[in-house]
Amino acid sequence: MIKHVVFDIGNVLADFHPIPYFRQKMADVDVSAVCACVFDEIWTRMDRGDFLCAEAMQIHLRKYPQYAKEISYIYEHWLEMMVPLEDTFAYMKECKERGFGVYLLSNIGMECHEYLAKRDAYFNLADGMVLSYQEHLVKPQREIFACLLGRYGLKGEECVFFDDSEANVATACAMGMRGIIFKDLKQAKREAALW
Image (tube, rainbow, N blue to C red; front, side, top):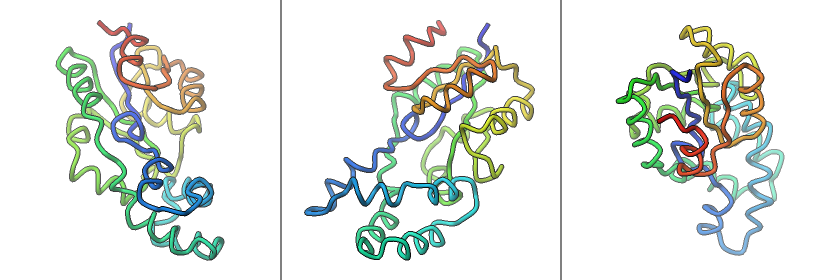
């Protein structure tokens, strides 16, 4: 029986679609190519807590000097892209009101966490959270899922997990959780069928 609902943040509770967002902001630039340079293994290491934004930006500027202007712009404005997905937050609140435990499990850097925590109420609503930069682990590593389960005394088979990444959901399932690839709330609610 499902007792707990675990939410990713990016593309579940807050929008994270860099290419369409920056296409609106940067004309006459191959935004797909620039985003491929920025949202890479260095970005993942920032989520893991290895770098702060300023350090990651300097690495990217050195690696891709041809995109210096665009990379700087992305780093200055990417947090603005993360518009809250209010319908998912309303669902999270409803889950809690109906007696489910609600948790966050997210790949997120320190600055992003600080920015969103000032703005978005889901951090205060959550019964617990595991954030990648604090643990120096990132999804889909099994260890970060084990951290969530162990820290809060959760059983995998009693958890449903929403994430937009197929790889992350696969690991959740391997850990005994019920994983759902989040495309939109209507689809996710239908698949979860919690009530």
